[in-house]
Length: 323
Image 1 (spheres, one colour):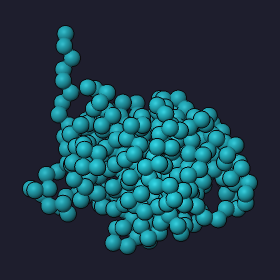
Image 2 (cartoon, rainbow, N blue to C red):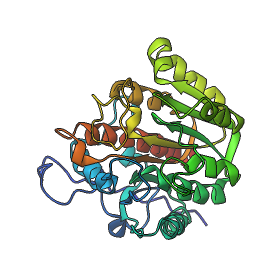
Image 3 (cartoon, rainbow, N blue to C red):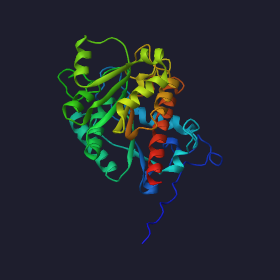
Image 4 (spheres, one colour):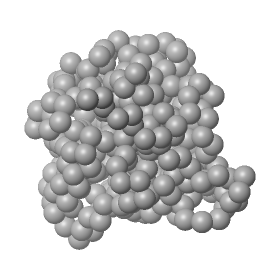
């Protein structure tokens, strides 16, 4: 008995019929998950920022990214792909996590991610602060085993505790290493810069298995060489990409909680992501957009385009696996 062909993906609202500024702001004007039933890539928000150590406001980041994504179009010329025609991408709404209890919130996010990944979907998560990366990685590792990680960020996020708290936006990747959910042969920070508490921050980070590509490395060596280095480090392992929008210079991303001078341009970030299109990207997150500090949607526009590139990579790979 022949297997029925998969149904044609339902794409974004037709902007030649309904203006981009009209209607609900789903990511890229895509259908809601409840409108299509199942998705190959689920775009999900996590409006949680209780783990921040400086400016709050990332709880509003997911919806700001959705609003800014209204201008995204269905064909991606940089990757020569129509991602929303290759696979069903849908907006899965938000994971509602307790803003008054970090431990409970972490459990809630993990449980919700388990449910989404259990359907066979990959996740493109819109934060929220970087605390959410830990429960997301836990869930991804249940499905794929320890995963490779490329972490785009101004900061290491491998500190031990803040005020004795183990779960904050500065600690998720130390916890992930300790829990054995990362492949320590294939870890790298990208875009790090700025002052640290001490040199021990770097030596501890190295012991955990992280390589570091600083923002100065990107400037001096160029995006093609950096992307090639990252591809070689990751190989064919299942890959998770986590992007803190503060990897961008404040000129390109003022709307974030812990800005640092000397960061990547939005063009550099997008080109590096595109250079990773051959990697086995199983899920991704984009966090720390704080729209209260943004100007003219600069930050959320950059974030929406980065999420679009990541979604395109996942859709292309899903289509290739079916072919």
